[in-house]
Length: 323
Image 1: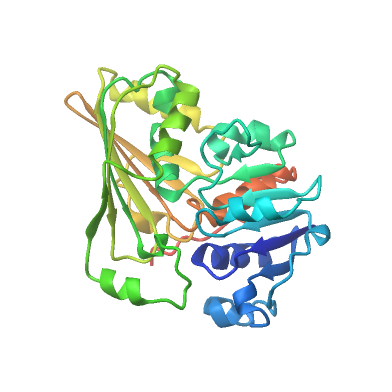
Image 2: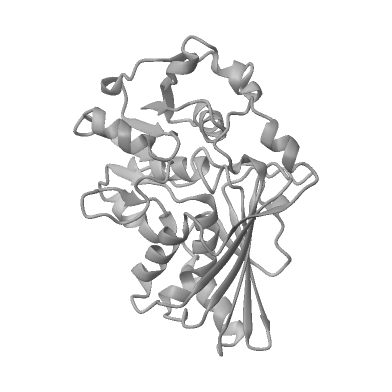
């Protein structure tokens, strides 16, 4: 069994991670670290886990008792933590924050996008930084184009994400109440995940230098990220379709479809669905993921499976909840 620990166990991502791991056939959760809630039952915070686990939050970091640690701390806190502790030499560390997502010379973190970096994770990586949810959806929508050096015109992207994109704990409902029956522009053209998006695309297309115009909206639905990206290209739709199908042919969670893509199609799954359309000289790419699963905790479990040589789909065969 893979013995795991979770740091920062109160947020939405941690709740989903616990839900996945307690049902994973090869995993045993040893502890969930959260000093502020020490002694409280995990199910008191994550009500959906009532009857599923008897775990309690702990103030202790028993790093020598686990094989892998998932870190669900807010932005900046993972860096702070690692500056204060010494990780055991062989301990695997999967960070769900934004601290190590961009390439840095002093970091050995692998960018945890399996559709791009599966080989490094399988071949002995110890430290992984998972992508942000908007970055995940955008990158999956564009990777095959970058692979084939086709990102040569301005890219226009609209992204909308559900209320669980916040760092709040499930007990906090103030933001949800405001966003109910509402939609708002959260960021225009400047987004904290743009750097990781451009870095990822340039890792496949070194010449990539096209403007990326990203509008990010906060939606009133609980979970999911929907991305619509368009650009001009002379390449015919049939050829583009084949490029996408070839790129994702041996990946287990990303699928090219011919029907309209909806968030409901991927809610509660680790899937990404992508649709291509050609209108005159414009290529429209629509992609949808569950921001808490494919965009966060599900992908983190996927990375863990790769790090430990398990089949990618173990513990992630999830039924969507469209109805």
